[in-house]
Figure 1: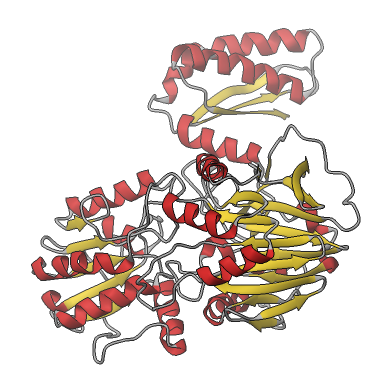
Figure 2: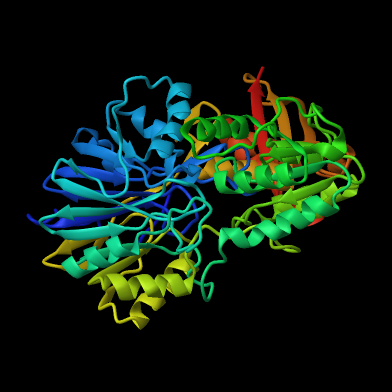
Length: 559
């Protein structure tokens, strides 16, 4: 686990009648969204997501919010409200429930349906669930929650208005203002306006597209581009998308029906999520379009709907790109349509996949060369519109990297919002007498999931992994006679991950022997001290002659 070092003192005790807001993820990165609200001794959590690792997180499977600041108060949690079913908002839920398995989870029908398989995987069987819809209210301890429909790139997304005697907080979740959405469910601006008229004391707004001017392109506008890809493709089509992007899958199914093609799902999460969406009525499958086998029709009549649009190494598309997928082999003339955005940090992985597919002879269509994806987040024009409707007293931009938060804050100021707070994960914001202020910071950081280990991997160990990957590894072993204090064997030097042969170390052998004999003659018999001498001597030589800084592991054995 890594910890942020914030130049703020721990927060004071919350004043009676005040509302405390504690973001534990999502402020400073696109992922692991989690915000904790405290009032009258009780805690309400909004979202609990994961962040996917980047190249500088070798071996890490997932990154979680840090539950440390609330771990001693698990019994005070009255519920986890989930705004929508994307992994960066629900992926961390089972890890929190492993610490207290009876915390109620609250969300829309689709959102909770997407959480259920995660709970089963973690053997969490008795978790209380409350399905809510837009327009409904639910009391959770001292928090009165009202749910508001918002449009996003997944159906059934909700904003939540949290009402306490301290004031009203409106949390948008992820949203945009598509006026012609594929499912006909628009962001309920009338509810935003009604809440604004009554008074919104703190507005938490999605910042992801705050730097993008104007309005986000409607989903319907990409249908012609998808149709054009289908029309000109003479062989098999592979479409890569998020496994939760039901709207995009719907467009692909409709295009396949128009062009008389069959569709097969590839990837475990894609198969599972589309089955859930179909059973709940969120995905309308044209008759006879979806098939179980990837070879159910000739290649020029097949479409494969695949996971892996972000270059994830074990996802279906990446395995196709490096020819390791057990069922799908990309052939010259195939078309690959990457119908997704480019999440910050994934650029290199995505371009590697594109290069691999291109090398195999596929024509790759992506957001960079065709209008085949639109964002699920509100652009600057939509955010301005919301600020003018809601007219909040205080604004806290959320969900985004630092530049997104600052851009969103600047928009709020332009509309005349009197108090805009720019915070990061771990900052504590108190709403007292209608005024919000940063009052301190909690010690929180990244929690790494590494196989079956959760939170045991430290930043130091990650640094060791990066060194091993970038600089290589050298072991040096020497055997000392414990009676005479003389060198019996060695030093033996072996390297891994270096271009040079082990013979390159012949030059340093005499110096290592000399340094050890000098230390032994002066009475240094502690093995740790002798190991440090070998590490310094060998490290200096490697840095000077090979221009590298590998991990050096010295071992002193006594005979």
